[in-house]
Length: 361
Ligand code: PLP
Ligand code: COI
Image (tube, rainbow, N blue to C red):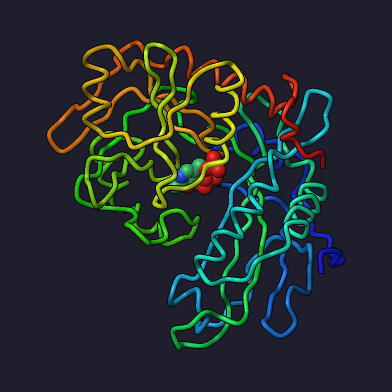
């Protein structure tokens, strides 16, 4: 199963000049490379028909389960071009493991980790010219799995498809590494106890879109969700994990409480901070603790982290009743930027990969 051979169908490639124009300023998620990966699963035959094909529409029966009951999961990781021209991905086996954890929760099939990582390698190799090398640039990889059995009964589908598409990426937030304002969603929740909050499934993002729109209407770039049971305990942002920094250098981040994503950036930053001898507390943190800590000077920095967002400094937290937290011109904080520099340095090959996180393509 894991040594499934890939059939390759070459695409008509985008002309060099057009690709170069895109790579000069790719934005996030706007452009797609020449190829994609597709692998089919059925209950009877398991994983089969592994293909690298030209990027394009996929056949979809209107009765496909994903269109009705949202049986979908996805991942996000990046390929980086190093100064010597070589290409690496960051911790792809962690994404493979997490996809399978999401698959478990969404009653989708597990995919062998080696098939997942081979699919990534195949796509990055064939579309290597699409991996940009500029500052803060990368090729964002989006593996995902959909249930595509044509059947309207409500049960786990017996047919699924795993795909990988790729999109050249610059900064996720327009404006580069500028501190952002975030919106505290007071009544709209993203996840609840026993729900799908810890899975990376499309439904979680669907439920974050209205609060994200409200955030934007209030001048904020992202939404902060709290635990729907306690209302004051911080979970995470719509697409990122959250860290606070105390004045003694201790990092605080919400524990993996079953509602939040086990972020690979989060996990990597915990390791890098501990390597520096810093304390990291993974525990319940309330909005009140954050606001009071900033007011009395014991909390001095905050940042969001994730594959797309990398590390994004937070300047303000805003809620229904106005400003809850404001770091003013102290944002971005020193530790935020130094961890950002260290992580991106490892990813782009400027710093030593002492934990063996990089996978050469
Ligand atoms: N939380 C959510 C809801 C996300 O969508 C993401 C992004 O993938 C993260 C956290 C950060 O996860 P990672 O660092 O693995 O990208
Ligand atoms: C990622 O960082 O990979 C994500 O999935 C976040 C998404 C909202 C772009």
